[in-house]
Image (tube, rainbow, N blue to C red):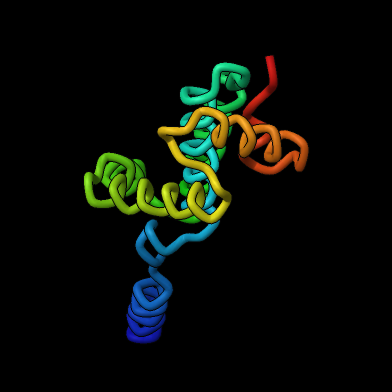
Length: 132
């Protein structure tokens, strides 16, 4: 009986030690959300590019399913997605990406050029877009 109790306690401590990092630190989740967000901004700010909306929704579900498969609960995912601080952090990353690629939300031509480049590269962003 003591051996069973000791083994159970060891498993509990081992599980606690292997807890997932905060979702904000999971690169694949954050990069996926960033790609969806940037594709959405490009389609909204470039008249010659549209979004593959159903593909975007499917990508978001895939990201959510990946988080679940990593052991995150629906509540942890919801809290992360609904967090104002996390939304602001992701927006800041998006603006940095736009700046680094010569694009600006207030300049349609720059957004269209970035969108066309992403489509041509078939990047994570580009696969969510198409030229009209």
